[in-house]
Image 1 (cartoon, one colour):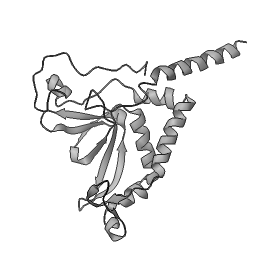
Image 2 (cartoon, one colour):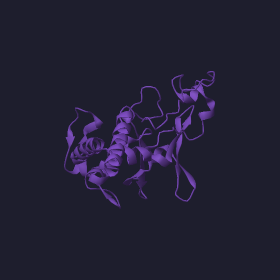
Image 3 (cartoon, one colour):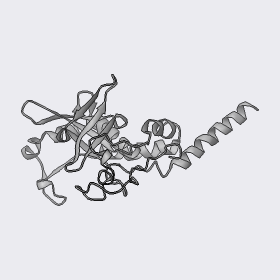
Image 4 (cartoon, one colour):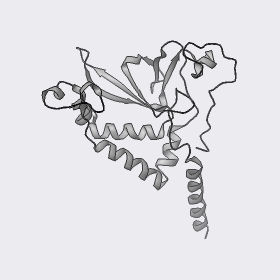
Length: 223
């Protein structure tokens, strides 16, 4: 948005590391390697001044997230778009069917989880981060959404991402392994470590509407 300044991470430093190709920011600036990759986009402000205050933003996000969350999750053989739909025992053997259609974690049913997931994808320039909760046998038992404003990928010149840093409310920072986090994002045309959010292009329109509402309100209050 106009008030969400964007930090250009393409870098102007000379190319030094090209282990993962010159297109990734870590290849252009070695200083990004091993450190949380953050941008200046403020998702909390986008929520406060966009989703909370602008009617058409609220309606768009609510409609997209609600329609997606109502669709049932199905499994296809070999994860192919045209593969056979697995039903009965073959589907029940996969715990993700129940997690994504019934109850995703101890505090959320599947509808709420998927609604929040889509909403974050529409507002977050880092994408959405899903933590896998495993049982003793290693199978996934639940899925938790990590706060995107406090989660950041750690670029690696060989494996692309070496982990995910999560800032806890206590100030402590923990590192989650790549295998324990699903990173979902809308492809960004310029930066593979960021996600594309439509609220960036709508930022000026959102800001103008907020200012117009405040102006009209003050005009009426002052008679």
